[in-house]
Image 1 (tube, helix red, strand yellow):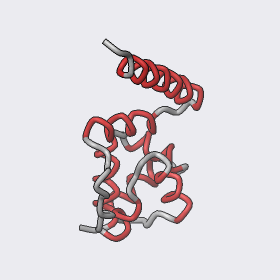
Image 2: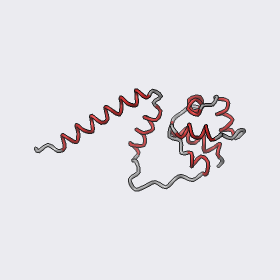
Image 3: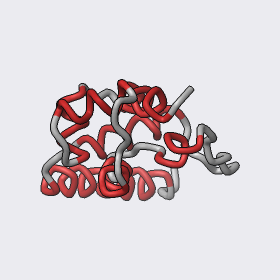
Image 4: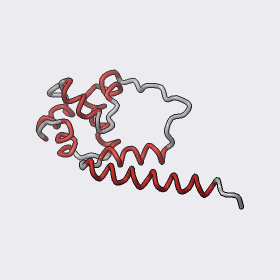
Amino acid sequence: MGIHERLKEERLRLGYNQSEFAAAGGVTKNSQFNYEKGDRSPDAGYLAAIADIGVDVYYVVTGRRVPLQADALNEEETQMVGYMRRLRDPADRESILRHAYVLAASAAAYANQAP
């Protein structure tokens, strides 16, 4: 499996269509198509940009995934991280994080209450 196939695999894993993925990488849909077809090779700037949305660039380039640590995210946590990374508006991310912090603090306070 080549870079072009792994690139497409990562795009699909993260739930992006070619247009969205191209935009995240700062390229045209045509360029994205050519990367995935194997007619063109992505440059470092593109790879850095798609890393910001959760692409495992090490895997795309080498075909090897970085071994997970024992405290790696579970499936639900991985899914939530993926959702957060797909949010385009930083204000949306900030709002969700504020809500998550409030819920976590509330749950912790409740758990520490004596019955």
